[in-house]
Image 1: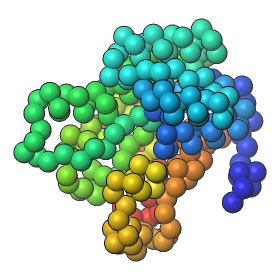
Image 2: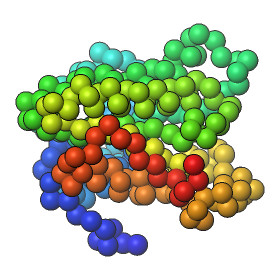
Image 3: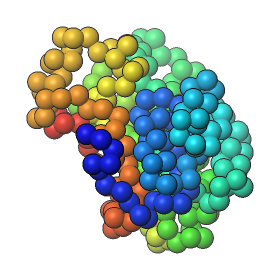
Length: 251
């Protein structure tokens, strides 16, 4: 369906939106969808080449940043604030679901996976919270995963990090709710980004997966982005501390 067949949210127009991991996949679609709403969009990513292309296509502000580097992350968010204003929507999207075996994981790899898939969620929220508190409004959307919910193996550090997103979301919703700030978890199923198609989407595996869903079609990045728009908009004003799954009815 064409983009103009879907909802427009007046409350998102002119609002400053920060998205992590916006250079590709779900993140790039998030940038595009929020930009179409008239939001002032900024996104962070370490992929300079693809980030520049997304910025050119959408008009969004791109800042190259390694989210594992917390001082650099804080500096990037401060730059977003100085150029666009206080962030009132944060989408903690960036993550990597690289496969790894139980026997291969060393402490250094474990710590790096936590830094890649969990730690920056907290520090991004910490950095934008003062502006949201001043505005007495804000929406933080943390990207989860059905992988741990369905008992998926083959990447224990990733599933551990993603399961922790649930606890982080619930705790932040309580801590920030008194200032009118909402915190929710958006939980994608298997989303068929270019990366997923290239690395893991064998014809046999895709067929089995789609047959297990209630709706037998691929979940695409726009399916995730459109729910993120609703969670960011005032239409979901009393929704906080929740998780919403977009997986075609598989889990």
